[in-house]
Amino acid sequence: MLMTDLIAKKRDGGELSTEEIKYMIEGYVRGEIADYQMSAMCMAILFRGMSDQETLDLTMAMMHSGEVVDLSAIEGVKADKHSTGGVGDKTSLILCPMVAACGLRIAKMSGRGLGHTGGTLDKLESFPGYNISIGEKRFIENVNRCGIALIGQTADIVPADKKLYALRDVTGTVPSIPLIVSSIMSKKLASGADVIVLDVKCGSGAFMKTEEDARELARGLTRIGRLAGKKCAAVITDMDQPLGRAVGNALEVKEAISVLKGETKGDLLELCLTLGSCMLTEAGFCPDIESAREKLLATIESGAALDKLAELVEAQDGDKRAVYDTSLLPMAPVQLEAVSEVSGFLSHIECEKVGLISMHLGGGRATKESEIDLSVGLVLHKKVGDRVEQGESLGTIHATTREKAEEAARLLRACCTFSDEPVERPAFIKAIIR
Ligand code: URA
Image 1: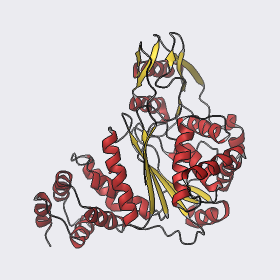
Image 2: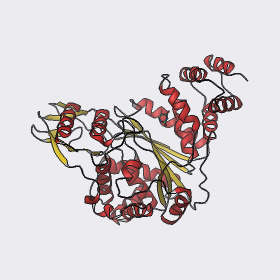
Image 3: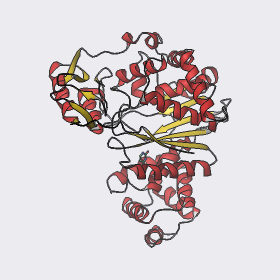
């Protein structure tokens, strides 16, 4: 088999066989297929697309390029969730304890944040002492005992994606649905869960800018998940403005705790109920979405979900008192209100730029090696559709110095657009793909 023949076949619209895809991925990971040939293949795939069978073959070949996590020692149904990434996305901190309190098993490996989006691991490390590297043995024991464990990636899963994604990033071949689907699903399938629920974000702060693209991606992801034998659903959600109100690690943890206490409602709770009810119904725990929502809401009313978060934190060496007393979480020395200079209806927030404000305050990473400050970020007081009067606060900036806070306040004002006419609040949940 020759890679040049495979490139020409895809260039001319042909369908690659299972063996050809396996040959290509194995050869690329071993360094026998050059980057320039793989770039040409990615470009051919971008223009010609792939059939479901090809996308499935690519996903499986990538999955088998590294370790596949074996969760068989965990009793019960194991569930996982994936988000395509957004600003202020603290969903896992709420959703995972809620569904674990309903009896589903959460054995989750999460990532750190990069650029304008945050990562669950950084948020969890806001709990003093929280250990993301407890090792595989404790990971399995904790899930069997508490029903939940959230750690950093241990196994060397999907090395093919690390190499391929870096190549796509510099060759203009990221926005190809089959390449995105195989990249995401190879990692999810290698993580071993039975039920996978995907939160596909769409809008200015997301990877998929239009609803149409997000729908196509969601359909591709769920199709491949099901063809690989998993229970799979996707929810398409708005990322034209940050999710909830807080952006920044410890600030997002505080907001998540307030949702788990039943004190905060709105888009964030709605998303957790939607994703959670997909998980419970796909797992066969509830007959329909309505009964699943009630079961999930009951975990908030009874305090069971909050207690489950505390159990998780304690089981991973963290200080669980911070779950019940958030003054024990990291707190920035300076708080400043970003005061609006105009009156009107808030019509647009530049979502990605809000994520970057938090990053520049020190709350996010410009590169993988950057150190971050867990205490900084911002809390929005206004969302799209809200009336704002001149002199009212658009949000509170949490910073290490007054100068940084003032600069962030100026940038936040610049992210907001106002209208004289009332503005309709955008629909938050755009579709559920099952
Ligand atoms: N996220 C991934 O993990 N892979 C892609 O290709 C795009 C987004």
